Length: 443
Image 1 (cartoon, rainbow, N blue to C red):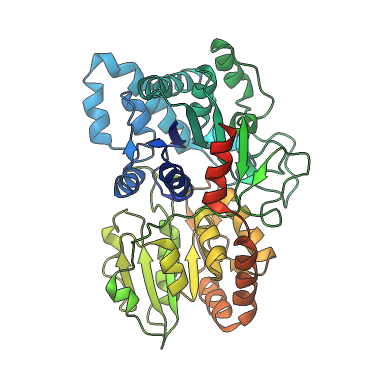
Image 2: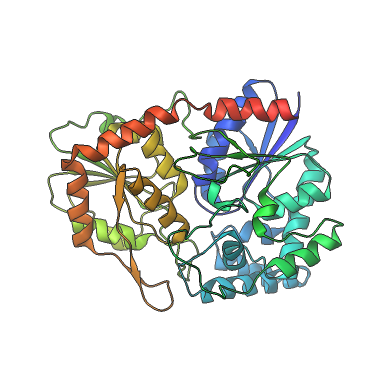
């Protein structure tokens, strides 16, 4: 029996959990011991419901960078002289996020500079040390990581075997997140020199691209070569879709009993606001606002879910043809639906493709736009791009375009037929079972 620690980028949404939990379950079924390190509120709830241990770092800064920022907690921390430096680092990180001026994130280097604080020496150091402490306490034999750069550095520092599970766009040999446009000559301040200073402190080799941090002793890539392309020289193994749903999990009875007189639309906007008190370009409230305008009083049944996040008061009451449920089992809900409308998160995209359900995607930034464009290229859906002001955070979505494209997908069999075609292809891959076999065999 081996002991595995599953680490994920500490964001307060469920995408990374829905692809890590199935692999963890398969390894547990084979007799191995599993623990997670994913401290944010929504992931913690899903991990608890799946009956896995979740190891929260004792370093409070690591918890607070999850995006579920609680300013009351920050005030309390400020009262502690011992933690004052950590809070100063955190405020620096929040200011950096708040000033992020573009929803065009070109590649994983840009992503980690803008959203992971990888341009700040002290921020990297504090978070790597938090993961080192967790690993030393738990004593895992293997780290299985889902794009957490701090965990990857910590694993290498402790000479732990590292297995990584990534999307193709994050691989250093990929074309990045915006592959349909030529990048400008100067994109952004590079985090490479900062990261290499930290790597030298831990006696690790320097890197040339941030994606190299996410390459493990074995690297597994989600999806299919046609939907998630990489050059043949990339040393990876495709494992198909990884999707989470407990075997005994069922839809709420009221959803199961919905008739087919009107189309069923599953609306999942994702995290409506990542940081309390400040807006970021990843926020999805704009999606919900547009869909309410587009679909209210139409002859459709809209099931709105928010991934364990509460529904803000400003959206209440919902139109009479909308119903809200905090969380539903994704595969069951997608199979019940005629159309998915979502934010373009990779897990949501894979769910629709796996169940053969077409999608209308409203991506809030370029990683999600990449996913949307690839699905549209396969004929399995369409997308509506938000427009934004110069800051990239105040976005608008044309509700008229949402309505036109939603009803076009519902009325044209072309989209459903292509989604079913990809579904059949996906099911020829091993998914979580194959991933667990490969991981176990590698160890």
